[in-house]
Amino acid sequence: MDAQQRLGTIVPIAQQGMAILSTSVVSVTAHNGIIAAFMLAIQKSITLAFLSYIRSHTAQAEFNCRQAIEFTALAAFVLANPKIEILDQSDPDNPAFLPRRKLSDKAYQWLKTAEPELNSLLKDFKDRINDNTAHASIYVTHLTINTDSLTDDGDAFTGSFFDNLGVNETRAFLMSFCRLIVLIVETMRRANQSTQGIGMKVGLENEIVLYANVVDDYREALGEIMRREKEQRMSAAS
Image (cartoon, rainbow, N blue to C red; front, side, top):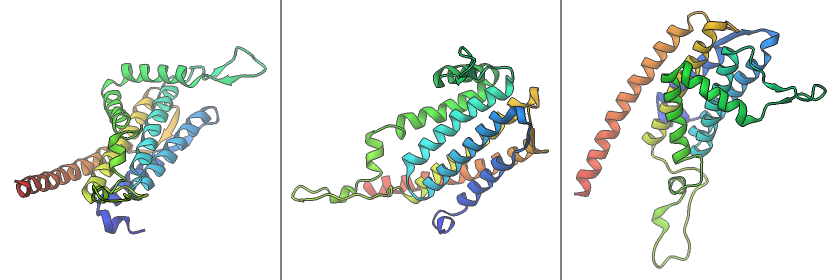
């Protein structure tokens, strides 16, 4: 409830992005039900990520962002290729979904060819998550441990259920989260251009451009603040 009071304007900026995502699709025909399922999965992952970021559960938030990226690749691929088979019909009486890896590999290969710039940005985002927070690592442990409790003569050490990130670090994660929303909406918008498989909001392209500008302005301002803080710490240490 006090997220905006603690973290400032990045919270309503993130909420604005979530609103753009949730209202980007205005209609889905019955035969495109799988796209509706993917879009709901994306929205669920994004909402869970937002809640996890503001309650200082960073690894959980990043995991949900990674799932949102994976759902986006699948959704965009199926949307742009409506004739693609998503079911294994080898047993007509018991059709089953294709193995996850088989469909995902096709989706990423299509995205790499069709939208190389978006693919590169989404891949960079996913790679950062995989390298830092999606798996057990030293980086993740430092979010929880209270290093001041580690003493040579101590008989206990302490940590926290919530991550001990600084305010600006949390803001930076949320800013990156907002940039991911831009990539997701733009990926879906472009995938829909050739097939018009779903109805998307009129003026969505302009809306996402304006939102991206807001996020970029915040990014520059936050970067300057964090740069000055780093200089001050280095000056104090010397």
